[in-house]
Length: 97
Image 1 (cartoon, rainbow, N blue to C red):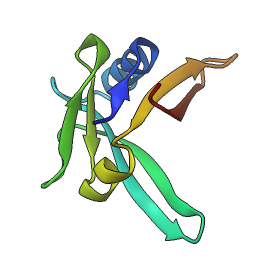
Image 2 (image 1 turned 90 degrees about the vertical axis):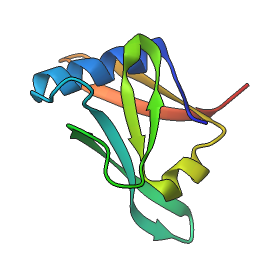
Image 3 (image 1 turned 180 degrees about the vertical axis):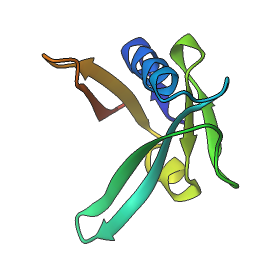
């Protein structure tokens, strides 16, 4: 199952709050495109998971909703985030250690 770092949890909570989601809202990760190099992923702030999504509750009670295909792809990954100058959030994935 996907792990969520505290910095990613904080970023998800901030994004969900600023988007005005209801309690329990979070970040949905879905497949935008499949190609020879793998999957291009899409991140969307949502009020609730889509039907069939896997729900991952991470650091700071943050919520990530994973499209079923994405749940398989990210099973051994960690979601992290960092804020750049100007406040932009950059998410990254890396393998669990």
